[in-house]
Length: 180
Image (cartoon, rainbow, N blue to C red; front, side, top):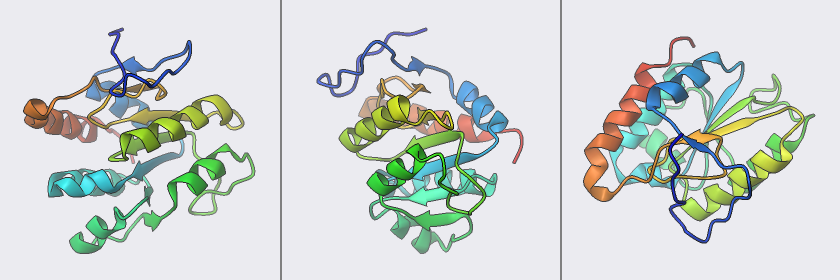
């Protein structure tokens, strides 16, 4: 396990911190999840590539909760299948509720993927899920360019000079998802 420093050094996660893993490990977990959910934020709009990654994950059968104004990217690309707008704070509270029926009415999720959410918002929502979403137990991971210690797993901090490497990592996540 690689020890990473939180992107925001004031982020004090407690004794349990997330692991830095290879993209294929995250893809494997997504593949084995019964009910995964992709939660995207407005940072995916900084490059059309990131919107395309979210769409590719949606095409693998993963429902997408578009938070903030990220829905704009899906509208501009003409992709509406499997995408719903949801307020991030409300969504996090719903995920904690064992009686919530999910975006599709079929039940809560067991695996949540955070992508493109402003760091300090994602950090707090991941902390809430990690500490309070225990019935059902929800695993939350991050595929952001920042290390989130409150996520069960994710990537190490990626500098702007490593942008192409980060994009390749996202492609590897998508490519390693085996079933949907």
